[in-house]
Length: 56
Picture 1 (cartoon, helix red, strand yellow):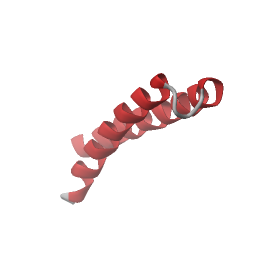
Picture 2 (tube, rainbow, N blue to C red):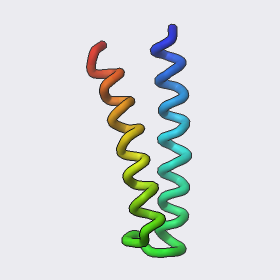
Picture 3 (cartoon, helix red, strand yellow):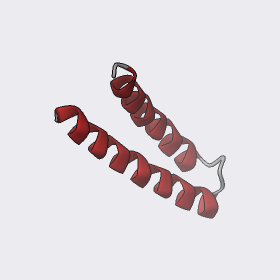
């Protein structure tokens, strides 16, 4: 059950970060410092999600 909760939380965070990154990318440019920083944070959460789900 804990894995399901973790998956739900991680997916929610990933979705919110992705939306924010796109929003900033559209306003500042996709190569802006802020967009790249959010992209890096998003990558870390995606990796966490993949690690949790690769052991299933």
